[in-house]
Length: 355
Ligand SMILES: NC(=O)c1ccc[n+]([C@@H]2O[C@H](COP(=O)([O-])OP(=O)(O)OC[C@H]3O[C@@H](n4cnc5c(N)ncnc54)[C@H](O)[C@@H]3O)[C@@H](O)[C@H]2O)c1
Image (cartoon, rainbow, N blue to C red; front, side, top):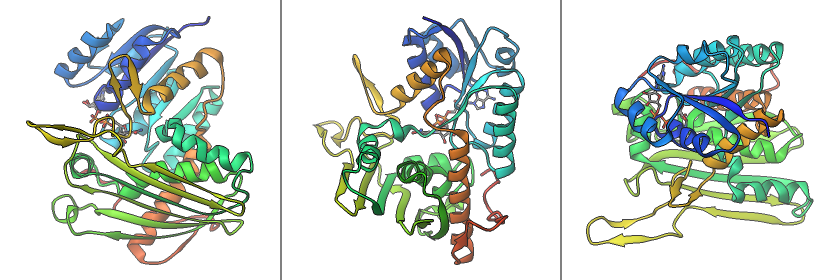
């Protein structure tokens, strides 16, 4: 079996999960990690025993024996430059969403990966949630007939909203609904999105962070199928990083309804009251088993690099997702529907600034 050397750059919440998964994978010969926070670097190094642990990711890019990098840094404006440098250094790249801030950056990364023959994929982890995969299968195998409409409601806690809104002025469309846009467009392929209308609400997060509380988006596909996504980040504190998702996919011959609201495991204690464990979007390790999609997604990437396969999420698809959430931002800003068949779509004003 071919083994690979892999680096994780940014070992915070998600990067920590990626590093632990890499350390446990039989496909990985050497793990290398980079993290600018010394304390966190040491914490993850103690768990994963990497070949090298550094505060300077460039030393990893200079290491010719490293095949692939997983980039899990924040704030989000770091994604494009680190991905570009990694590709220029000849590394295959797994990049957390968002793949870039601007469409031209995404296009440049796609062109660079192609010209250098590198694998390039984006972290749309929910595709590795079996509940989401069965929605896709129900369309692909004809169970529910031709799709008519889809609805996804996704809400996460205010703690997470503050964490994200406190570091970058990206909207819930770009940071939350992006998972669902990816998912529904994946389910509905080869249909393409042609029109986007969105509205935002600002009652809580606006004053402190200048970001909306939630966004409601309607997307029309080229065959007339329509889908709606409501995504927000103002749920009261519950279990750390709790997320709640509800999906309805309705077709000509049936429907599939998914409850991923994470209320099925209920822990109540004298000290902490009611908690909902294993309820985060990436998931978490529970003793010998992993609950949630991020471990499976990480293993999939490692397999694709070791076995020279195309990862499930293509960069071209991620670019289409980006066009949709950017159009949603613009629609919310202008109050008008956005025609995606237009040659160019202007950017919404707020999307590129740091908090
Ligand atoms: N797929 C999912 O379900 C999911 C869930 C949460 C977050 N995300 C995405 O993953 C990314 C990471 O999110 P997070 O919650 O883990 O963030 P985080 O802030 O917990 O971790 C990011 C880490 O990157 C480090 N970092 C920043 N610049 C660096 C550099 N130059 N070199 C090395 N390390 C550097 C930071 O010190 C921090 O520890 C975000 O962009 C987010 O959009 C995806």
